[in-house]
Amino acid sequence: MIVTNLVLTAALAVLGLASALPPKIGTTNIGEGVSGSLGGGRATFKQTRNPRYRFNGARAVYRTYLKYGVPVPEDIIKAVKYTDALHAAQVERDTGSAAAVPIDDVDIAYVTPVTIGTPPQTLQLDFDTGSSDLWVFSSHTPASQVRGQEIYSPNKSSTAKLLEGHTWSITYGDGSASRGNVYVDNFTVGGLSVAQQAVQTAQQVSSSFTSETNIDGLLGLGFSTLNTVSPKSQLTFFDNAKASLDSPVFTVDLKAQAAGTYDFGFIDKAKYTGEITYVPVNTNPGYWTFTSSGYAVGSGSFSSQSITGIADTGTSLVYLPTAIVTAYYRQVSGATNSRNYGGYVFPCSSALPTFTFGVGDARFTIPSSYISYSPIAPGSSTCFGGLQSSSGLGINIWGDVALKAAFVVFNGANPPTIGWAKK
Ligand SMILES: CSc1ccc(CNCCO)cc1
Image (cartoon, rainbow, N blue to C red):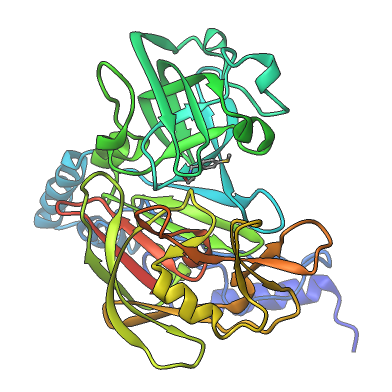
C-alpha cells in the first residue's frame, strides 16, 4: 500500500493530537519514536547537556500553572522571585573544553588551540602539567628560530599590554629552553576566557623548539610557584580561571593517535568508567606530585610499593625507578639499556608485556602498544621503549604513555588532589 507523505503526515498529526499526555516538564519533546519522513529526509536530534543550565524548581512549577491556565498561587510567585535572586547572586560560573591533538604518529606531544588578544590570534599550545609558564612563539622570536610555528603579535592586539621590566627564562627536563618578555592579554581556551592572562613572548627558543614545528608554545598547568617570570611571578591560566569555574578542576583525557580533551571546571562522566580514585598531591615544589601504590609487569603479581612521581602531560614517556624498569625489560627478549640510543631498546618484533600501576586500590594497565614507543629511526627494526629509567632525572614521571591509559582529574581545591579513573 502506498501511503503518500500527506496521508502519513496527517496520521502523525492526528496521533500527536490524540496523545493527551503532555511532554515531561523540563525535557524537549522531540516526538520520541516519531520518525518517518517529511519530504523524504530523516532527522535525528542529539540532546546535549548544557553545562551552564541551572534547574530552578519554583520556575518549573510556575510554568506548569501557566501552561494549564491555572492562576499561579502567590507563594509560587514569591518562590520564583526568591530562587531567581539566589541564582543571580551566584558568581557567573564557567567551564571550558578543548581538544588535545597528537602532533605526530607516536604521540610525542599534544597541542590544544587557544586564542590570544583582540582580534583573536589562534595558536596551538602544548598543555604541560609539568611546568607553569605560558609562553608563545611571537613577533619577538628571531625569524631564524621560527620554522612554520604560528606566532603571537602583541602589536596586532588592541588589548595587549606590555608588563614593563618583566622577563622570563625556562629550561625543561629534556634540556630544551626559551626566554623573553611578558604581556598581559585576553586569553581563551575552549570557551573559557581570562581577561588579563600573562602571555610570555619568546625572544629566544632552543633548537628543539624550533624543530618541533607543530608546537607554538606551552601552557603551564603546574602550580604557579614554578612560574619563572621576574621580578613578579605570574599565575597560570588555570589559577586565573579557577575562581570563575563551576568547580576548581581540570581534567585530562589523552588518547593514543586520536584527539582527546582538556576540560576546565567540570568532570564529564561520559569520559570515564567506574569510580575516580583520588590521592593527595604534594605541591612542593610545584608539580602534581602523587604516590602510586605499586606496579605489575604483564600478568605478574602486583608489587605493593610507594612510587612518588609527577603527572606530567608535557612529557612523552614514563620514567620510573631502575629496579622497576629492569624488572619490566627482563620480560622482553632482546631488550638492552643502550647508551647509543639513550635508553631501553628492543627488537620491534619482540612481544611486550603490559605495565600496570596502582593508584590507591585502583589499577591502571598501560597497553604494550604504548610501550612499544617508536623505531629508533624511521624503518629501523630496533624500537625505543615508552618506559624508561628515571635514575638520571632524580624524579619519577608519569608522562603521556601513562596518562593515555586513564582519565585524570587535576583537582585544584584546597588541598589539591589528583583523581584517576579507567576509561
Ligand atoms: C621541544 S618540544 C617540548 C615540549 C614540552 C616540553 C616541556 N616538558 C618536557 C619535559 O621536560 C619541552 C619541550
